[in-house]
Amino acid sequence: MIIETQNLSKTYRVGRYEVKALRGINMEVDSGEFVAIMGASGSGKSTLMNIIGCLDSLSAGKYYLEGDDVSRIDKNKLAAIRNKRIGFVFQTFNLLPNISAFKNVELPMIYAGVSKRRRKDTATEALDRVGLLDRAHHKPSELSGVKSSG
Image (cartoon, rainbow, N blue to C red; front, side):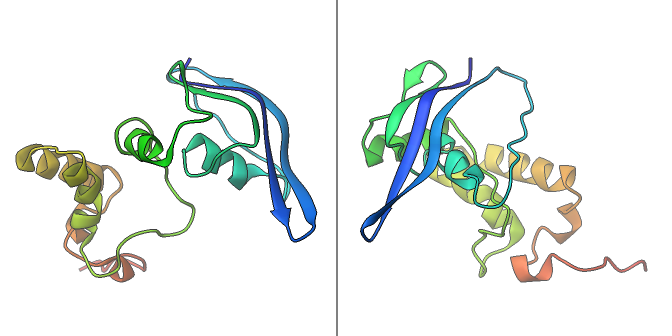
């Protein structure tokens, strides 16, 4: 089991009010599975993904990542988990605007201590897989739009 939640809940306090964003979520995700989180606006999809991605904490219940209980660990250990064990792809751009696409892809590997050669190979392969290898040295603002056909 890669991801397991047991009775996961999240409550936010907004002034005098409590907002129950998640109530008793139970789920399991096995290695190799593809899972879609779907629901109406405001139903808690982003909150759930932020908890699974170790970007936010839960209010109640348990969250296990590869069998380890990450429900109650401190911020430094959560940062290490985000660095080494779980990835997160945001719906909106969260790229550093002043560096190239290649450097944006390479940056997490620098923090993880990956060798320069392996970083280069991995970043090149990743950009190639998404059709951006020819734009590797462009900044994020230069990536969208129609490719020239000439």
